[in-house]
Image 1 (cartoon, rainbow, N blue to C red):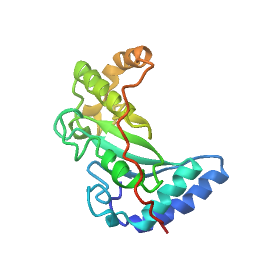
Image 2 (cartoon, rainbow, N blue to C red):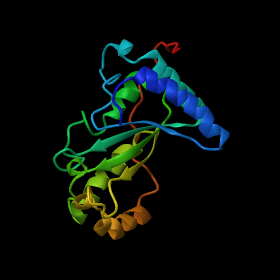
Image 3 (tube, rainbow, N blue to C red):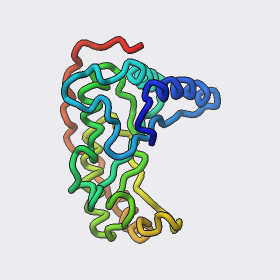
Length: 195
């Protein structure tokens, strides 16, 4: 969740890709905290996306690795949170990663309600994730999302989603085979030459 030093992190992840590949594995990179990355999300000034960051994700796409990020409903559900925090990844992909061929698969490695601190109850949880799942399926580059959190650890006991597991399993089993209509992806502009 280190939302800084993207050039250094990009160099590190390029090296780690090779290490993981030598063991037959793939890596999830960056794990941006909610509201990040601060780079590349603006609709203007594509130069804010650093060349090393784009190069890293271009290699990740070519080699089958993943970008990871976290999304939380800060005060309540995912659905009722600003798109500066939930579905924020779309602007990064549409404005910079897709046009530069750096649109590796994305995993939302943490997604939860109430800033990850409090379970909203089974009915609200399922309604929220039903909406969120439909939104994620609209983006072909999204590989999946992990719900936050399961277990009785002292720090996150109030966020434990265990009571919702039967309803979540029922949702997964009865989930429609046909995803919603995908969002249009803007045609690539002039592709950059990340170094």
